[in-house]
Length: 98
Image 1 (cartoon, rainbow, N blue to C red):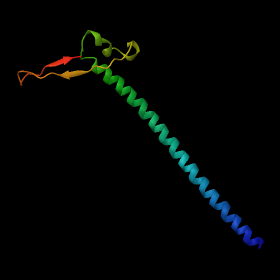
Image 2 (image 1 turned 90 degrees about the vertical axis):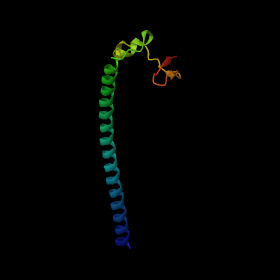
Image 3 (image 1 turned 90 degrees about the horizontal axis):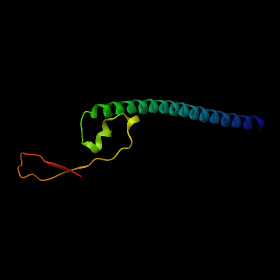
Image 4 (image 1 turned 180 degrees about the horizontal axis):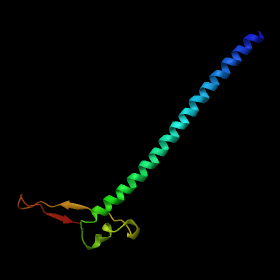
């Protein structure tokens, strides 16, 4: 009877050990994925800043000049919206800013 109980206890400990190994593996994979995501986010942030600098070439008007400035010099970001206005000449595209 003692031998049987010892075998059951040993099997239970082995199952717990296996579960702990699986949890450790999942934790390591999550940590690795988190590091990758952080690096990707940093890279995307740099690319977004470069794109902002490149788009500064386009001028939208006096009230939107801050959009071409580096992020550290911007006072605030205001959304810019444009609405198409039907043209009398179909070959001519006209837009009206609001």
